[in-house]
Length: 111
Length: 113
Image 1: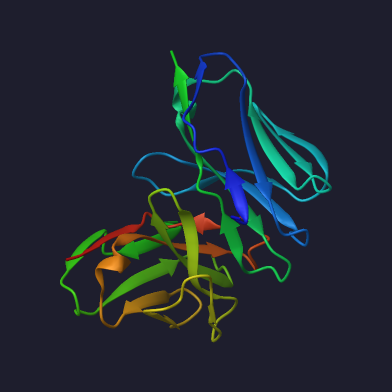
Image 2 (image 1 turned 180 degrees about the vertical axis):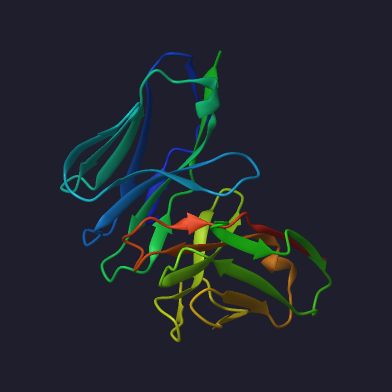
């Protein structure tokens, strides 16, 4: 079992719709959770970080964390073609220096 | 403010050759990391340095060595390259630990023939 699992996609949504990206993790001791966006041929860049249960909103992005279910999600509202990228879920384990990345979900936003 | 820089951007090696990937950050971060990214496998941690003068193994350290030269620079060395080391290598840094945001360099695309 992979430590951080994501649906590889591709996830295709029309422009203006809500894109929902999901991630599960196996280590109950995980303490920090991140969503990175990676455009093709580029390096990852942080979209959202979340550390406690519940929702965290930043503009069109909302991260949701449920530690009991070991589940973290990212919602993108009013999706734009420029949101088309691979989204990486990342989880930092207890101890604070080893981050495990999921394989990523490819998102396509159709104009 | 360049952030995290990496050299070279591209490299082709023959099996058995050695090389060093260079990484530098100008954000005064304490922690630095080396990852490799392979298709369908996401990013995997090779080595990290929690602070100047310390280095530790990550998930896939075999075949690599690292040096934290000073607070700014963290290099990755392949002593005897193998085709299995063909990958894209990313260096990253964070303020104090991996519970902080990690900032990534542009990557090095390495091919080992």
